[in-house]
Length: 45
Image (cartoon, rainbow, N blue to C red; front, side):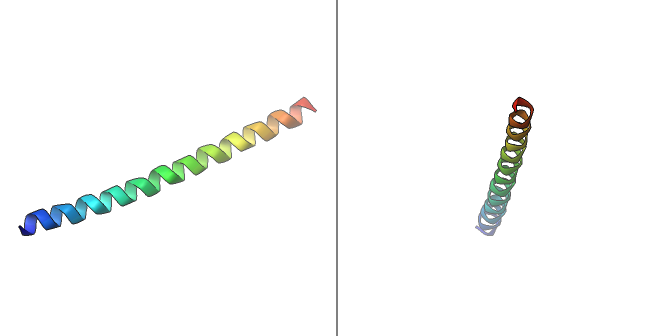
């Protein structure tokens, strides 16, 4: 029983850290896309 509880806690911790990592990557990609769009707009003008 103790092993099941310990494994559940470890799995929950890994799931939470993975969500934070994916969210951070999404923000980075969004920022890069905005930079590319701004540069393209400047080049167009």
